[in-house]
Image (cartoon, rainbow, N blue to C red):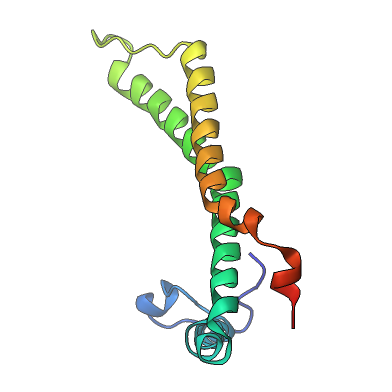
Length: 136
C-alpha cells in the first residue's frame, strides 16, 4: 500500500468499505480515466492508438505470465491441500492424495499455458518496426 489514511476519518460503515477510501485516490482514478478514455482517443491518430493498444496487450500478457498464473497455481495447490485435510480428517474414509509429481507437472503446465498466452499477445508487437513507431 503506497498511501496512508492519515487524517481521513470515516463515520459510516459504507465509507469505511469504499473502494477508494482517500479523496486523492478517487480524483486520481477519475483523472486517469478521463485521459485514457476521452482525451487520448480524441487527440491521438488512429495508427498510434493501434500501436498503444498492442503494447498494452503485451503488458497484460507479461503480467499474466509473471503474476497471476503463478499466484493461481499456488492458490489452487494450497486450497486442494486444505480441502484434503478438511474432507479427509483423522477418521474419514475419504482418500485424497496429491503426489509431488502431480504438483511439479501441473506447475510446468501452468507455466506453459502462461507462456503461450503471453506469446500470442506479444507476437504483433514484435513485428513492428521501431522506425515506424517513433517516426514523428
